Image (cartoon, rainbow over all chains, first blue to last red):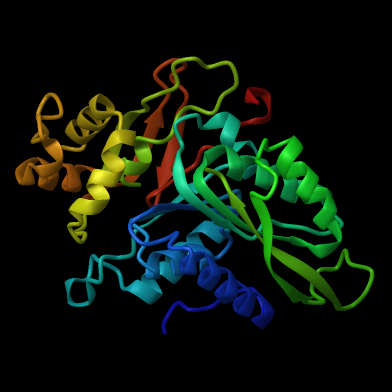
Length: 204
Length: 122
């Protein structure tokens, strides 16, 4: 497929497929408004659109990532400017924005479901919690997010205390292994497996 | 950028009270056909600020939306078709979103609005 060039590795691909599959099994996409926070090259957004989302809003800080994501969309769904290959062009919108501040900055932004793979790692500690707070602020139904398994207890408390969710509303629906590619120079080890949890946060 | 997106975005500058709706400065508009899905339109309509949508559509050259949402809108095919076109088929490809309070312009390039703030605006 032209334009299908992910910067991420294979592990990302498999994990995203699982994430999409799980969310879809709960009926979170068909005819819904979905947001992808920190969309990167747009893989989750594209998956959600392919699974029938009525509209997907994909946010990222990085202009290059957004433009790559847009090219990926055109490569997969066809550019609707080209009538011969008009497949609805995918219902995906891209917005450049500081995802961490989305809930505060965008009071009118309300979606049904958020699906995201927030950055985690040693460089920006706790940034995935900022993403989670933003996601909970805009999602009406549910949030699907990946976090390090080592932070599981913390997230469980965070969901109740900070996000104000009922006990039992935050659940780990899958535990996965993430092979972080060695290209991230700030990691001390050359390549490292990381255990990650796929969380489902039920908002209502 | 479609108008469904425009309808959900506000000026992100801290302290701005009337940061919605953005006024649209039109550079280039594209029209792309999208699948008509009345179920989705019924789902989304309660969240749409209709006056803002109507004004935005007009600024992109589409003036067919009635002044107010008609009675029985969810079963009104002509209305739903117009709503569909306004929300999902008009794209602002190049231009700017202008904050109604501060006049700050947020550029839209290649259909992507840039809502990042400068350091002194946060």
